[in-house]
Length: 390
Image 1 (cartoon, rainbow, N blue to C red):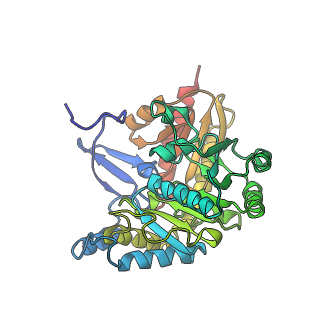
Image 2: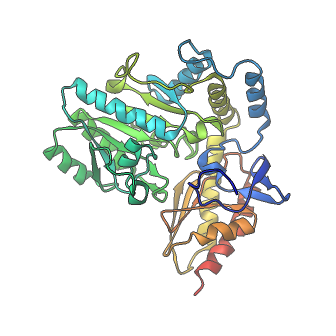
Image 3: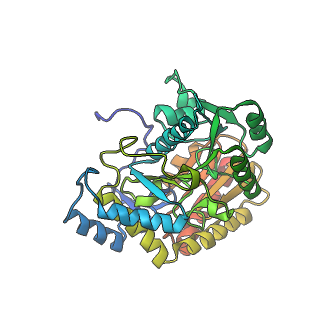
């Protein structure tokens, strides 16, 4: 009997090694990875240049504390700011930590404007994490249940609804920020309308609010651009990153620009492990390999190929509601709960995920080849058809 706390309904498989888009279990069975550790393994498994960079860094220095200057942290911050046009970066270890930093930053921003109880607008079906503040910002009662009292200071509105935000602006003078995922990952690969984000930027400008984007799942080249907001031409005031940034090494980041920059000063926020030399080597190497190997363009091309493949194979199949996504962030919504497909796919040697009860979620590594994507289609499409047959 395992002494690991029972917080996950784990699948009955243990992986021991991987290469590229493939994983092998303890019995030697091979699996095609369509999930990339939930958008984490950007470069797949055992990428030779990534592994070499990590080995070299481990041989030199893993951790030294933020009491001192960390060269790798400065290099990674410079790189992220050059890719985003943002101004500052705070490093932490995960997406919920990055989002926690954003929430704290928004509150401090509000207090500096003498707003007594700063409030943040968040979305229905959002997912921002499982710390007390981030689960309070999350729009999912399953995540929140049993952890009340929730953190106050959040105003919830429907996703993609500008009028709801304008109504809040009219009636709530305590709002200081809007916090939104450009693409809701856990919420079912629900994409934001480009015009909506542009209008949201305008409303935030008019109200002197911060526009805060959670790019934890959608960032790092996954949608065909470095960050999903770059499909719109706007610039957020705050952006959070994690998951794919370190290709499997825990690293999170909270970036600021414009009126959000300079909000935090020494002593306002911190992290023991955040931005240590190993994590920053992982982040910098990941970004450099994406750039060198043109993986963003590949993600866009491969994503279109896969969406077209699903559309063709599943055309006219009763029960397929919608195939949607951006780049290698793909959702297939069915008309009924389909969690059973995860185990059925596992038996066929394919790793997938189901979110929002009825949405098959695919988040392959950015290095997946076209022939591997075709193998994924060849396994998954018949499974979906069989599952939907009466």
